Amino acid sequence: MEIKDNSTGQDYNPFEHRNVKKPNSDIRSLANLIKASLGSGLLAIPLAFANSGWALGIVCTVVIAFICCHCVYIFVETSHGCCRVVRKPLLGYAETCKVAFEVGPKQIRPYAKWASIFAEFSLVFTYVGVCCIFTVLIADSVKQIFDRYVTTVDLPVEYYCLILLVPLCLMCQIRYLKWLAPFSLLANILLVATFAICLYYIFKDEINFADKKLVGDGARFPVFLSTVIFAMEGMGVVMPVENSMKKPQHFLGCRGVLVIAMTLIMILYTTLGLFGYFRYGDALRGSITLNLPIDDWPAICAKVFIALSILFTYPLHFYVVLDIFTKYTEPHIKENYRSITQVVARIAVVCFSGGIGIALPMLEQIINIVGAFFYSILGLIIPGIIETVFRWENLGKYNWILWKNILIVIFGLGSLVSGCTVTVFDIIEKFNSKME
Image (tube, rainbow, N blue to C red; front, side):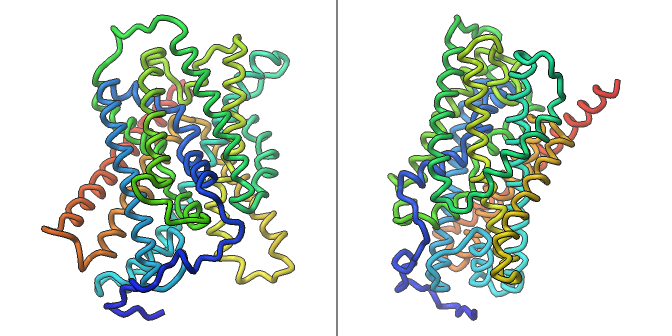
């Protein structure tokens, strides 16, 4: 489609032309969006505070929440602008990147296709990584319970990852976001219950503040960044959620679905991160539920709840990977074979993600790698570049949009390089300690 330089499409309202199959209400969309950013990330936040120190953790969590929310906001707003230009009712994540390059400065227009490919590459690998994290987290929780109450069974966590592939394959056969919404709602309820139980154990006894650091070791701060970025970001799910809304105009704005979701997420993260660190200190593990006692029924319920919550969340993140797969394969597959192809592909991707979790069952390190590398690209670097490219002819007074996005991209690159470097050294150290 040829796009003229002066084609702004201001007379075209994409919302009026959307015909979404099984659209979601604002409440369901809010549930999906919150669930996309909650889960293993919420429970890993106390460990992040242990790396940063509690005072620096509070400040930086609020700042990162604002940055992540802003990046989602500008990307969705850019997507709406691209829809008006090409006169399409909706665009996905990679399609938005492609159109932004097509209408951007003439020098970069030939790279529009590559921008789309890079965006989809980032999406696929990000959410494959998330699926690996979910597999290991569920396996860790189940293993703790079995090790305590089924003493005749003593299996390494890798075997639990393997067993989990069966229910995960079944869950991932759900194909529509509308049908996933009840699971997301149930997962949110279980997560809130887990959150409440964690708070119960945190405040059960007197908390000792004396030995807790205001500011942690500077060498561990990149790990804090990686964990919080992983926890906050849900960029890959944002466009599917927004595109499936019955009233997409309610997504942005001061009282929109996005701002409400990110505000709740920021409050939950800051609360659990701060007091979780105060309670358990440097003994924190990749998920705070793994620090809870194994002999108390509330703690056992929390471990079961988080395992079920992540199980119900898994298909929502998995949806992103299959959405891209379907886009490229469906036109080349006969209609009679599309259903069986979907079934086989879903099983194959679940097994691939599980295989990575089995090969590297290190929850903290996988979280840090996914947060530092993939989410920095997906949620920070790409939105900053795409808004700049799309608005190249109108970057505001003194080009403030350009300078603002340069800072966002630098922040994303800094998080990527520093987080990956520290995490790789952590993985090497763990392997060396196992071999000794």
